[in-house]
Amino acid sequence: MQIAEDRESWTRVIYPRLAVDASDEFRFRRESAAPSGFIDWRSGERLIESARRTLLAGAKFFLGPGRHFVNRHGRFAGRYLDEVLMGQTAPGSYIVTAYAPPYAGISLSGSGGEMSSLPDVGIARAREISQAVVRAVEATAEAVEHYRNSGSLSGFEAGVPRGISYEMTQALLGIATDSDGADITVEWDTSTPELTPAAVHFEFKGSDAEPLGKAAVRLAEDKSSRMVTMVGRVHLLAKKDVGSPGVFGVEALTSGPTRKVRVRLADEEDYHEAIRAHEEDLALQVSGKLEKEGNLSWLYNATVIRTMGHVDEYQRPTRSSRDVSVGQIDLFDADASQTPQ
Image (cartoon, rainbow, N blue to C red; front, side, top):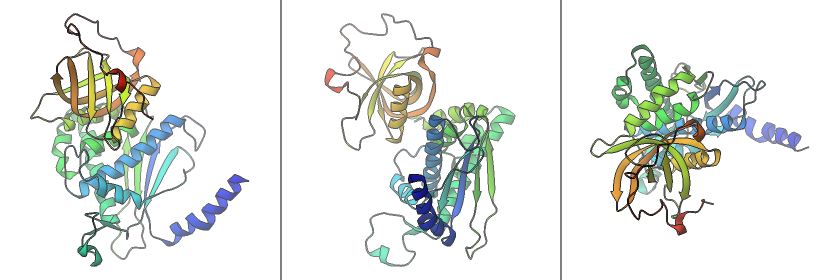
């Protein structure tokens, strides 16, 4: 009964809107060994998350290039995403479809005011933003191809003015990691009065996760400070302040300058990845500015690069007298060592 009602709602409400209103279509596909049209649950979640991050990263680039946006332009990108619909999964390999209305106006400031009452003043058209998404994906795909041919990450650095960023490499990393093949296809609605761009198609391999991960580390670096990248186990989570990016603890699984750190994130988007790593016992690769405060080590302005394999796959460093000072307290105080709600 519920399925019939859902189908009726789709036919009566959603499909007419798509049929009548112009929509540019993004399709994010990932090969799956599951039966046609299905995917294992967690891979499906990651694909949806990666699709969302791709759209957000490209929308941020629309306002100007950047190596690492963190929260910059985040509200504008969110307003663009609010105009996008997610469609049903297509048959075959698992596909996430996004429909972006080309005519929708996205406020550049979000604050409104006198300028907002004037037509097209302080407004960006959704298609212009969607085209920025495509340009950023294209630049990143070209940098990946350059790495395949040369083994060099220079294409990622050179492509920053064209839309390559930490955020975009992270998004595509999620699509490529552990995949048997993945791709992004964009088709533009032809009912618009202006010249319709040609459809575009970008392909990624599971092996592309390596250069995308390395590029993410490089793009997240702040060259004015000592940046450290480590792989570790998330063993405690604490998110005290509403709306803050969050804090968690990492215990190193590979050799490095410190055994345990507190991680203060730059972007709250990364906190969800830390929770997933904690719940599934996955190793987490994180990068940030390493600072020492008393007996505690911190990674400030930190970025989650990616989740790795199960923590049991890594040999934990041997604890030595150099790792811990006499009287060193645990990573979190007792009142902070709580799992977030």
